[in-house]
Length: 245
Ligand code: ADP
Ligand code: MG
Image (cartoon, rainbow, N blue to C red; front, side, top):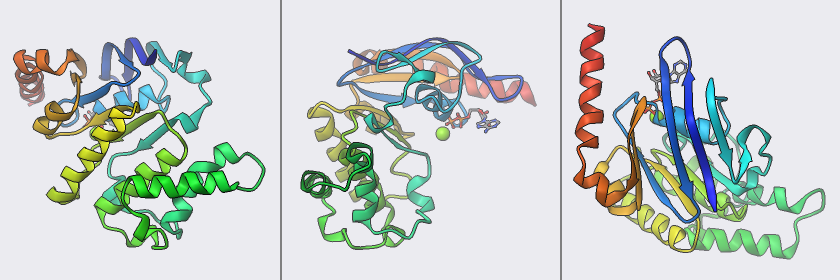
């Protein structure tokens, strides 16, 4: 089963494309690391995958449907860039925030005992049961990250999309967080991770997409490590910057 599929996708905010002619697929169960230099279009590409931007050309499918028609939002857990360091402004407790992940399933009715149990399980899985009654605004970056993941788990998302989720998170929490991601992936959840630390990505991901506006590599992690894609993608940035001067 293909979770995300892009064919010849191009998107520009202004004149220069931020993403150019990218084709790739993410299969069910993949752990895709999305890497590239600053400003290379990683966030834009993720937004395109999730239907937050429409491509200028090319096509995008999410869970086998054209992304524009996709309306099964609870299947996706998305943590945007800087979500952790910025902090939430909503005056809600951790339990309330995670419970929001259940509303899509609860429909118009009240939450059932089963919904509440799912919320408890999600809190337990990410290890923040003891923080359930704390305000989200009072959490550390690492704790807040876990709360976002718990919300995605409570919604029974089968795709987690994370944009530099550990910026502002200390090294120890970061390791624990990546172990959590690995075990969620082992349980069948598809993961797309943008992370600037290449070592973390190549340790955890089974697939790598390396971009600098255009795609330099898409394939398994071993072939990425053995290829020149990284140097080429980062080198190209130097050229682009030089060109502008
Ligand atoms: P990355 O996540 O790899 O750092 P982005 O996708 O955020 O890269 O940005 C890719 C390019 O698009 C950059 O040149 C950036 O300046 C530009 N860009 C990003 N967001 C916007 C926006 N909202 N409006 C105009 N340009 C943008
Ligand atoms: Mg970004």
